Amino acid sequence: MNTAAFHYRNPDQSSQKLSVLEKIGFGSGDAAVNVVWSALAIIITFFYTDVYRLRVEHIAMLGLLPRLIDAFADVLMGMFTDSHSSRWGRYRPYFLFLSVPFGIAVMLVFTTPDLSYNGKLIWAYATYILMMLVFTAIVIPYISLPGVLTADSKERLSANGYRLFFAKGASLVVNIFVPMFAASYAAKWGAAQLPKGYQIAMATMAVMATLLFIFCFFTTTERVTLKSDRKPIGEQLSLLFRNSQWLILAGVCILSTLGYVLRGSVGFYYAKYFLRGDAALLSAFITVGIIGNILSMVASTWITKKYCKIQLFRWCQIVTFGLSVLMFLVVKPGLDDRVMAFVLYFIINFVVDLQGPVFWSIISEAVDYGQVKSGKRVTGLAFGGISWCQKMGMSLAAGMAGWILTYYSYVADKAYNPAVPQDMFTLRGIALMLTIIPGIFHLATGLLMYGYFITDKYYAENIKDRLAVLQGAETPLEPVV
Image 1: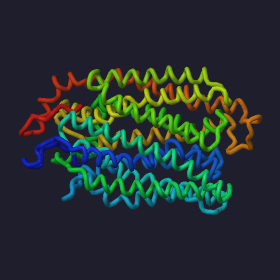
Image 2: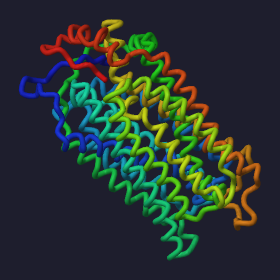
Image 3: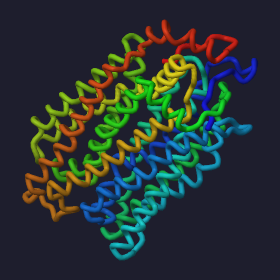
Image 4: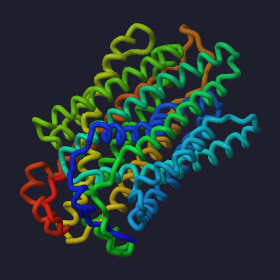
């Protein structure tokens, strides 16, 4: 296994500035990633229960086990990318060669063959596991890419701003287009064709994702190369576990992902049953949340130019908890409080995502801190470990969603009219899953971030110069922000 140190490739590539086109290209990669991420966070649970008609008690294990298997693949992929490179770079080739398998895997998940119930369950497990493994193989290189695009801290933060803007844009497209297209297809060809509508819609999104990954490959450049020295996996794990700042980010990743995925997975249920909405309202409700996420990316980039990004990270998560409690208390089931539900859902999604550009840019800081502290660098495993934590959060959230829905006696696609909604007990559970339960995880995230102390000032005073000496850079590296 290789542990990496940074150096410049050659003098004519020493400029660390990224063009707008390259930032857009980098962002297009996360747009491709979010075709799957948004589907897993928002659509997939609803799809399996109300479209593919799997029993809700099976959803917990279906959401949990494949993602747990895939979570361990993250670590292996991080190790592999650390020890292999090519003439196209260390990370970019995966975008080219795995883009088509990625698209095919996405299409298979949303294909609904006419099988027995057990056959449908086996198909769901097999295609879900396949998609998650391909997802890992292409996402681990992608999230590692910022470290080799540039060593300039401001450029790195700016690139991550583009990245998250495009990610949320893709999520917006997926969550507007897919349910609306599927509903329109079913309206035209019959209610029994709803699964076919989802299949065609997600196939379209998969093609888009494939093309976006190819675009990312051709428009980005790896300016910083990785010089490797071999270290056994045990030593690397030991180095990571002694890095207190990386451990905090790992915990933050699990907790915040639990909050995100729980809230996202119940959005369709909340709009359909709690707010008594049709397909258009379902799409509108999810869209309002994603618009909040997108505007948050812009606001975060502006705020962090003037205020401490770590303080922003802490407080946006704590405030999210307060807003979540407020939404649970204020919004009641039915038609009367729809406007208030939309407003509060927008605000929650805006506030919670203010940390987005910050989190993905400070992982490199924690890696740098570990190198300065121990004299040894762990890069691939550090990023793979964060992805593992994200998958763990997704796995646990998927399992919790199934268990909570089961506990609250949710019945998939229950015969509905405005006078006879789901039981109040069930509606209360759906409301808790959208508000207070994820809010608790965000509160824990904000409190945990009080242990993270690598601010811009700390980095400049304690890491920057020492890192340049350790890496043997001819020109001192800019601080990683």
